[in-house]
Length: 259
Image (cartoon, rainbow, N blue to C red; front, top):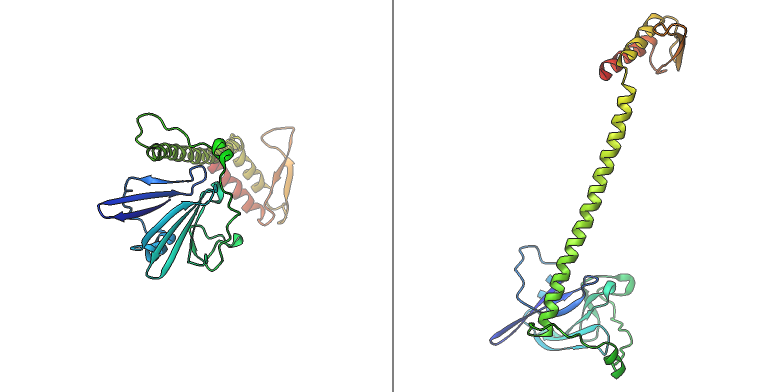
C-alpha cells in the first residue's frame, strides 16, 4: 500500500494505492494511522522527490488500468504511473522523458528498474461498446458516494483476506507440529516395543561375559545356546569395534535404559 497526501488551502485529501493481488485499487481514504515502522524504500524516495511539489493532474490512460499522476517540483516535471494489473501491479516514478527513477517493485527482467526507459502498452481508447460491457457498478443505498462504498468494500475484503491468510498459515503450522508429534509418537512406540522386556538385555550381557574369552574382537555377532530358553540357540549382535566385555557392558546399559 502507498498513501499520498494532497493539500490545498482548507482541505487535505488522502489517496490509497493498493498493489496486492485481488485488491488492486486506487481511491480516496480517511487519513491513515501514523506508523512508527521505518519508511519503505520507495516511500523514502517519494518523500525526497515529490514532497512539497505541485500536483498538476491525474488521469486514466484510455481504458487501461493505468493511472498517470503529474507533478512539478523545483527539479522539473515528475510522473507516477500506477499500474493496477493484478499480479503485475506496480508504481513507476519517471522524469519528464519517461526515464524510470525508481519503482515500487524493482523488476529488472521486465525493464522496471532505475535507469530504464518506461515502455507503455498500446493504449486503447474506450468506446461505447466498452462502456456497455464494463459499466460502473451501482453502489448500495446509504453510501454517500461510489468512492465511499469502494473504500468500505475493499476494507472488508482486505480484512477477510488477512483472516484467510492467517488461517492458512496457522493450518500449515499446525500440520507441521502434528507431523512432528506423530513422528515422535511412532519413534516412542518403536522404542517401547524394543524395550518391552528389559530383563532380556541383562541376560544377553551375562551370556557375553561368560564367553568373552572365546569371542574375537571385530565379530559382528556371537551364536550360542540360549541359557534362558532351553532347547533354543541365540545370535547376539555385537559392535565390531568393541571387545566382548565392552559389548556386555553395552547390553547392561541398554538394560538400565529400557528398565
